[in-house]
Length: 266
View (cartoon, one colour):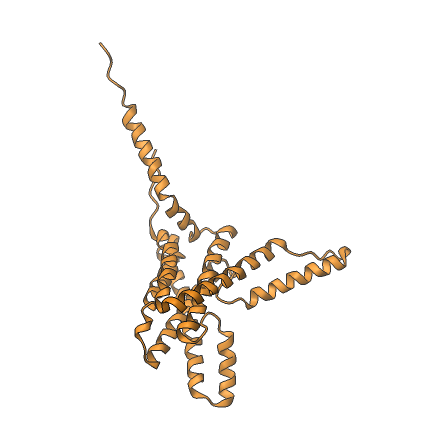
C-alpha cells in the first residue's frame, strides 16, 4: 500500500505565488525607495533628476501656455524692482503674485512634510509628491480660464506647484539639491571647471576637480534642459493638457510611498 503524498506541493505552490507577487510588486517597491524616509545619495540623485526634468517641462509650459516662466523667482524679483521704479502697477502685481505663490507652495510643502513626519513618518516625502501631482492634474484644465483673471490664477497655481517641488527636494536631500532653477547649478559647474583648469595649470597646487559633484550637476542641468525641450514641444502641441503626463509621473513617484509594505511571508 502506497503512502500518502506529503504536503510539499501546496507549500511549493505558495512559494511560487509569493515569488510571483514579489516580481509584480518590484516596481512599486522601487518607486517607494525613492521617497523613503531613509535616504541615500543615489536615491536623491534619481529623484532629483526626474523632478528637474519635470521642472524644466513645467517652466517651458508656463511660458507657452501663460507667457511667463514659473520655476525660478530671480526674474520676478528683478521685474518687480524695475517696475516699482517705473510705477507699472500691473507688472508689480503679477510679480508679487508669482513670488507669493511660489513661497506659499514651499511653505505648504514644509508643513506637509513635518505633519507627515509626526503622523505617518514613512510617508513624509510621498505626500508632497502626490499633492503636487494632483495640483498638476488640475492645472491641465487651466485652459478653461480664458480671462485675464483666470490666467493669473493659472500662473499662481503653477508657481505654487514649483515652490512645493523645490522645497520637497530641498528637504529630501538635506539642502544638497534644488531642481526648479539652474543658476546655482551652472555656477557650481563653473567653479568645478575653474578648479580643473587651475589644477591642470599648476599640478602641484593640490587643487582638483570634484568629479562626482560635477557629474551630478551636469546630469541635473541636462535633465532640466531636456525637460524644457520636451515641455516646449508638448505644451506647444497640446496646451495645458500636456500637464497630465507630468502629473502621472509625480503620482507614480508618490503613490507607492503611501502603500504600507506587506509583511514578508515564508
